[in-house]
Length: 195
Image (cartoon, rainbow, N blue to C red):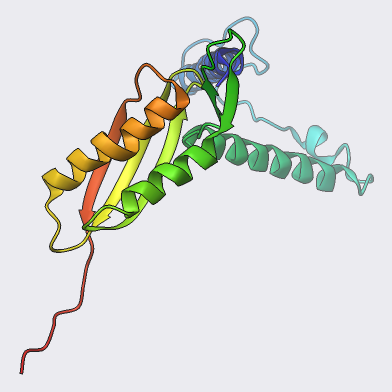
């Protein structure tokens, strides 16, 4: 992932947080009785946000309040979209493969994830596997979840995943290292009847 959007994102977040902190702190201070700052838009703590004249100025224009509400609703939706984008874990779209000629090549991240998951599922005792690649395209990291059958030994499954699926992916992509976080969980199964 490029660091420029991340840096811009952090700077914008810091600026928005600073503005909200200053405005919110000012509102709180004036509300508690502190003298309003020179740049404050109201005269004191009992001043209202919208006077009667401000509220009724646009009464004859039927378009004003629907536009205000639509703009505020759009702002809320954009903020929610941005928040969900921040909370999502980013997956790698492509991994840089070292070809030895100085130029390199790329392989789709989903393809490498699919191959690793398929190789993990081929292991004895692994019912399902999910793999996601994160990080940068030159230095990816793997996040795997292995669903183990009741008879599987977790230590063996973990060792085989590292020695086979992870090692093969690292070697095929020509990576110096491929750190991984592996989560193991057992698969629930129905009890068998014994007669």
